[in-house]
Image (cartoon, rainbow, N blue to C red; front, side):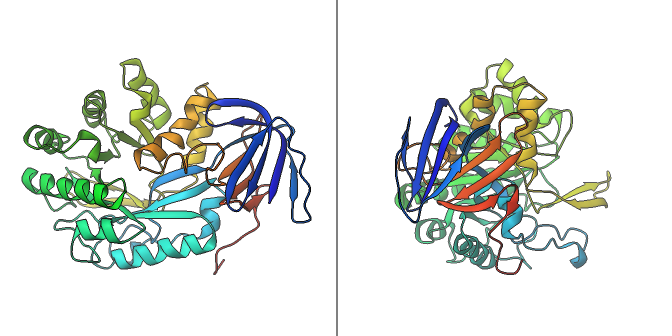
Length: 381
């Protein structure tokens, strides 16, 4: 059990300076003053700190991405402390370009491993390619029967995709939607958006020709160029949820893109931020030849949140939504995740009030990071 005393709590909404008790992996009590004694109780003084929900990163290549520059460019698997030191207490794993040397089986094994090591982890079946790679032979069965799987991944408007047709995309989205309803999950289609000229064309056609709710389709990397971002704003204004990627485009960094989108009326709850961590970022010339390749950091989601508040002067309550509650609601995990309230999972971060430096990270009621250092490491760290 952990009792944190005298700390300012953001749920993301500021709820005041209070005491908070975590027990059995959950938040069990929030009150003005909690007087509780137990030999198994750890007491943390929250003076000078703020408490926020643990970050949710919904786009991480937990088994490693890359591979577009031959076998030597395959990114290795992520280790637990890379996530926890970035404040990530819930992660959603995905595959990317490579659905051949990478597999959904390996992705789910890694997801289960991270859960065993102490954080919450979920995944999407599929990869860039179509027909989607799966475990059971069916996207629908994967989502319904495999606990960790909450949706499916696909790619559009990218030379690395399978050039899926609008009809095929509609069928995929319908299957994901139905599976989510049956399995009690999000049942979403995460769409990697590339730099191609087609942009949102197939998504817009899908919405016109099918009965699939617009929120089933989740385009990501939408801030990679101006044209795509403008199309994404239109999509979000119609009720769609868009995901902005950290470190993709300085002019359209999530913090700047969000402010721009809000000015034209995009609802706050229709925007989320993710890191694309452990995926490879790549640059291609006009002929599709690889020019440069690197690896994205999961720490980017924390750095982006901090920049929203300290550089862009965004209200802390607002900035938190894009990396906590908005995501939890979008993937059907709220209020178990993404908020500070009684009976929510014990996922919290203690930040230094002035600098927003991470001091302590608690996942499922267990201290993972203390005084900025990982105290629980992954099995092979």
